[in-house]
Amino acid sequence: MGLLKTIFFILIFYYAFKFLARLFAPFLMKKAAETIQKKAAQQFKGEHRQQSSTVKNGETIIDKKPGSHKETNKSVGDYVDFEEID
Image 1 (cartoon, one colour):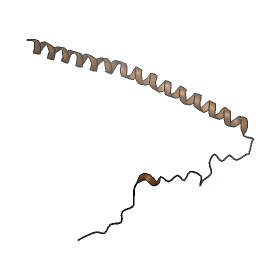
Image 2: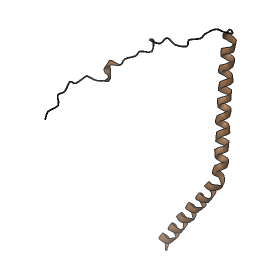
Image 3: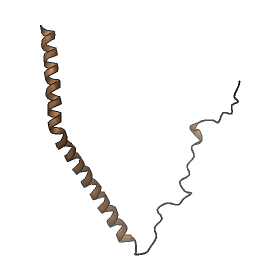
Image 4: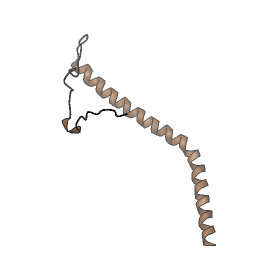
């Protein structure tokens, strides 16, 4: 009898959770999208304000040099030459 009660409560909990998830999922997704949108807008405003104060009209900005980002890690491993055997 205890096993049947446990299975019954698990099924009730599962279907209740499924039902509530369908009700609240659109609301939660909308709130998450609004939060992400606000964060993106704040970040854009901060970058735009920072760039506009230091850049003159018509001036070209280069953030990084093309060849300065070459970082090779020699500790990755050794090159092993191989031959294909028939």
